[in-house]
Image (cartoon, rainbow over all chains, first blue to last red; front, side, top):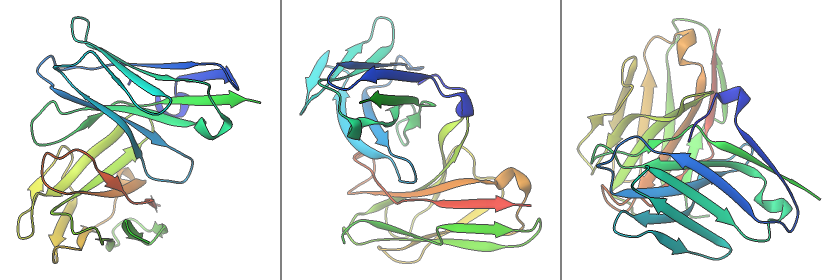
Length: 111
Length: 113
């Protein structure tokens, strides 16, 4: 979730390769985490979530890993496709009533 | 099309002008949210409505007001726009409060000059 906005961290991968996007979260008391995908000109779209009682959760082509010891979250995308090009955000529920979003990572897929 | 609809999509205001951003959802969700998205800041919560008839402040409520008009609609008002409010505004909804499977609208890009 680290970001400098206009200078978003960018990950560039070749089509077909696997992508790993990382996020450091802030609150050790957070118990729920979500990854969102945001395509240009659109709102964020839910990808996958994980609760703090789990270390790993898999979806279709995506896997989220949670390391509570170092407060680290990662999103793995298998066989990355051009349609995966977007900004990816992690979010945590660190205050009970609301989600806190990271700044995002831009994924660029080269054909 | 089911989802969250925001209007307008783009708006330019002069400093001091007022405007209302509209949001409507047709998924029968109980909870609705307004976020702003700025470079380097991620999405920040402005206000939320856990259920019809209630509204609460989020992280950055100053300069804004909200109205939960009914279960479907949640509006955001800028009474006196400032350049610092230039941002992209997103409305979201969820089935119930603390159900974090939010559905987001496509956003309103607001520029205050």
